[in-house]
Length: 377
Ligand SMILES: [Zn+2]
View 1 (tube, rainbow, N blue to C red):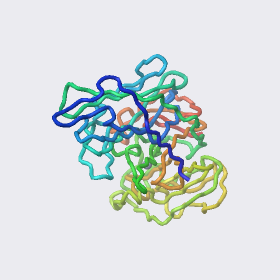
View 2 (cartoon, protein in one colour):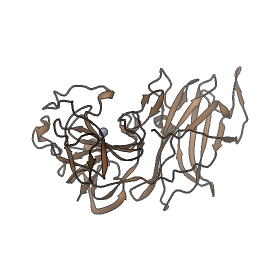
View 3 (cartoon, rainbow, N blue to C red):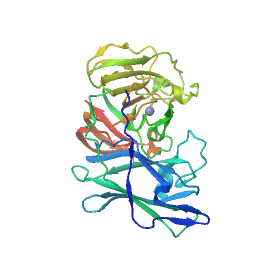
View 4 (cartoon, protein in one colour):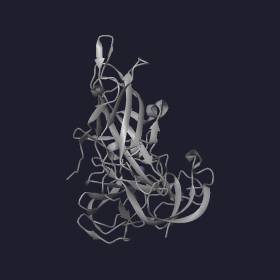
């Protein structure tokens, strides 16, 4: 069963009640704002972090432009986060599965754009917050409409705790919520509802100090992580398995797969109601488990491979709220422990230059930060 939150946000008018542009009128209600998922705070880089989206729908007959977005502390009205025009243009994206020619912060009539939000705080936990949104008729540079909405109730759910998914290291935890084509921005529409299964997905790629392959990297056998053992991150029951994808011996020979075949060979491990771990791109013939089988934390369940939609051998790992690789919402998870040893602040250097070493730090109950190098012990 999918658990879905659908919260229509109420609002009050801050400034102009309405504004007429030519023959047309827009009001604060011309922008419908929806929060489909209550964010679950997750600790990253020692900071409580929220990763969530809001859906903005233009209910007017004019093009609307979002010109400001802030998160404020409900208690003292301090601004915790502010997205300017440039940020909004890259963080607002039309729902791609519809025929929607809108772009960035400009939303056409009847169109919906998703705003991708990441916020963190140096406090121990997030205070009660509210959002402030500023918008106008596109082309009008003077008259802005503004909306606040009620306190955002954060989910009281705790992120799921994972044991090691792999052995040793060095593993680069590859993800970046701002990548336009990365996990977080890939929205799947299943039965008329848009979902983001990879909201918190991590691709683990093994490296030495700088390289992910020894010798010719076109040969997948040369990749350091290839055929490494993949482990159950918790006790659970195998919910589903797919093991019919072949593997190409070289990157060059790898076919292009449609997004419905993105997973390649995979295992879905059910931890509890509405909590499924997805292990993707597994090596053909390596899956050692069957649906219905009970698994213990730490068991070897498969080997890392190169199947499905991928550009090199790696383990794709994510947690979702139902047993569907694409038709589910991605949820945050944290590891019991990992040792952080480095970072790639500029990911274009990955595979070419050594990572920025940091003083090794054993971290408990956090998600590895974006594009960092970790060791599982
Ligand atoms: Zn992935």
